[in-house]
Length: 252
Image (cartoon, rainbow, N blue to C red; front, side, top):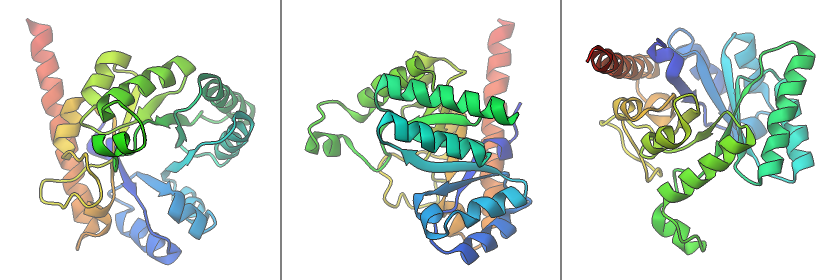
């Protein structure tokens, strides 16, 4: 069974390398996986990614690639060469995603390294049903997430990014082996901020989430290290609860 640290991803969403470095150092013993997003990557010219690799940390490169297939393939190939652990692409056309999955596998084999996990971005957690209506989409967020999850799985993508509010349906439709990365995670004591579909760590795990992305509740905490430890413990306790339920059901 994975422990809480194995499922917790901390988002370093700052445009300042020194602040990012300070945060990584603070969390070095309590966090194994860090997310480098678009703002951080562009502002620091990739320095944070390199620093994390020096520290032996797993890197979730969250650049949400979205372009024509040839450009996407080149971007994915470059990310594999950077030896990232996980990366995001937007769920788009079937063939484009297939090519991304294939080039990642080929490049990793060529370099004799582990293939990064590739997950598709379905619906951003800042979007509500009303927002989708505003842009001409006559589906609910859950309906659109499920439709795009099926498409990503068909294309050979490892999983998706989705709200933990929809993850139970994703597991039902795509199976337990389909990777689910869930942002919008907030402990009950934290503000929702600009996320409209938020869930607590325990709720997310009980819904079936594989990995949880947590940013401000840790990075803007008075004690980031303790906040990370507390959230990892909540994740682990929820995982233990699920395992005990599964054991009981098997015993029937």
